[in-house]
Image (cartoon, rainbow, N blue to C red; front, side):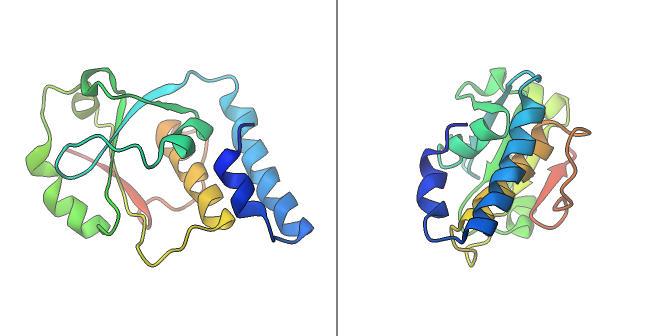
Length: 152
């Protein structure tokens, strides 16, 4: 598995913790190996494409898509924005012609500004994105807490 940015986060962790996190990543990697890569657009509340989560999306079985009409899923994510902020701001920027909107595949993701970028948080985020993109194949239990499916 390509782990460029994760390698740095794993430095300094004890062996048991590294092994536990690696097992969690391996579980996701093994399951998505046999699934199609889901095209995902990652937007901020101004509908600007974002690339902050491209590695996590790739590790979770998605591929970043810049053409909104080709995206099966749209993840709204903006550093510092809570789920409440996103629920308030996203409805007005959605276009009902987008396939992801028609198929109710809009996801709001809260990456809490207080949460530091640690190996644990990165692995958790990869698990969450895997669950968003492959519902039914993964259940990690953070839906409603860190992210929600947004019904239009």
